[in-house]
Image 1 (tube, helix red, strand yellow):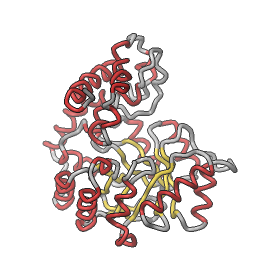
Image 2 (cartoon, rainbow, N blue to C red):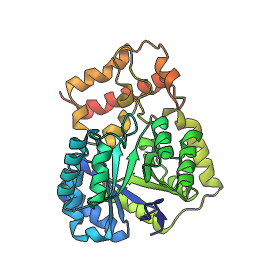
Image 3 (cartoon, rainbow, N blue to C red):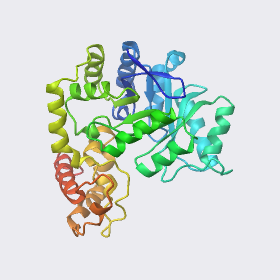
Length: 341
């Protein structure tokens, strides 16, 4: 498979890489079959996180015997020294490895401070000195934090939502990373499930040569689709360009990145979760959203004041109340089938 240099890390990762969040939804044997097939097909980069329930355990179960042949990245959620160190140690144990190739700070609300003696960055810098991690990166959904991280020089990679529904500001992030020799890892390459034409997605990324998409995969059928597209890469032709243009016109206004700039809501709607509910239901364990308590939380959308504050604060120009209405309708249909009686 084609490989991309991940910036100054000097890691060479496959253009089609494996996002391991969705394997939370399948059992261990199914996860093992998917992960082994990915490895045998040539995929060499697997991305997970401490907070993805048993995703790390499944990677350890499936791939520990070929550890030296793959590149592993995970993420720490804690912002303090002790918490970050404990999470890294847990991740290493789960994945049955004594190091990770890339540790990432998981969507922090503000950029980690390298000078904070009690902060998570110090913990990971020490872990790097000890050989427990090889490289340090950051993930985020906020443009401001992402830009600060690039400018700081303290991170070797940035992971950010990126697809052909992205705005010019997000395309600019990729170019800033190129200039800083930072690896740019793409989450939400399918825009949380809004994009359904995999050929168009793969052709799009052919034109972005410093961007590494990690596709969230939860079935062999999904995996085989990406393997086939990697073996027979579609050309970016007029037909593909037309699909992308049509999707951008119809869907770009519905792609919530979960950055949280819209918060707080005066009636208590958890906007940054509710506006991504279609993705949360279909790419992560959905049972947590099927309780009566969460049903009531989602139906706070019915109390929306249409005040426009969330819309005015969205850095991506979304019509947030309209997106929430759509997500509630989709949630109710899903709840009718899977929710508590």
